[in-house]
Image 1: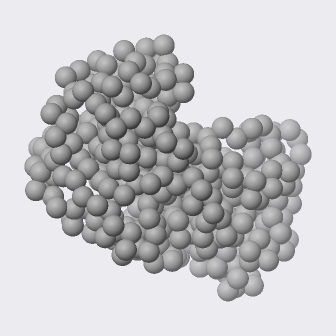
Image 2: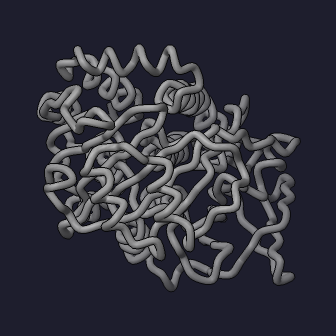
Image 3: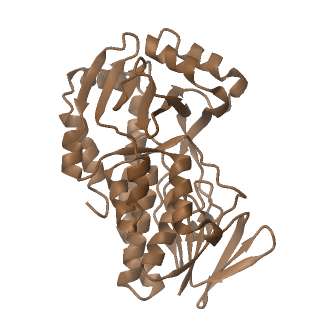
Length: 384
């Protein structure tokens, strides 16, 4: 039995490892000539860490995961704590710690774990066909590949998604722009072992510790789509958007490197009713394109891979196995996409009355409510 995996990102590589662990040969194809991660870092919450360990890649998280032991929200003008608490209760409940990781390290080590030479790069898929004998895909270079099944992990702009869904879904602009990057840890900006978020005006500025003494930072601003901004105006843009914000925010703006800071208009896609068509399955962002507001995009892809591998171990028939995969993942990923959308709207002032009410709640927050919410999301994964 042979699987074709389209996409060598976090989802595709997780799927390939899961299938290999299930005794299934894989060929991995990637559209780009060289992997260049989108975004500076990624939050791997305990459900994702458990998946990485299950797949045999836990050492990657141990090596590159940041020491995030506390969480705090701060007032945007005064920089005073609205709430601040230890994440130890979450770590104890979940059995793993949250681990923010630099994307280039994560994807690079995952590539090395799978084998870079075992990935065929510069293979952009155009279409797929399937019959009783298996699946065939064609690439823009005129070549094709055949396998017994196809795992479409080709991202939020998936070329293979219409083959499964029967239509091309529209991406939905979430209403805000995100800037993200890496800076050296500076405790005049935020404590070194804390996820620190400044909130106000429907905006946020957030910092998470990653390995090697750096912060992963991001700025969110509700804005119309399509504004003509680029690296040449980035620092001035952020200075304007965060005028009047506290000194640590201004210090962060001064410290960042515009040449390595990403600017992304955030989108999601309405959850799908199906993830599988015959011998073809969607996985990762191709299956559930979400906003990053609950930090579960990468974790959900890892969960997909774990479930996919388990289903193919339990069911010898490919179509039966993929149907079980779909049954186990559809509701879970729908929940994650909609949770992220709800959090997105509250955080970014879609209804400012609700956003202001959230700010007030943060002033009364002991940590118990936030940890409970985080844990309920985490424990919904396949490994508890």
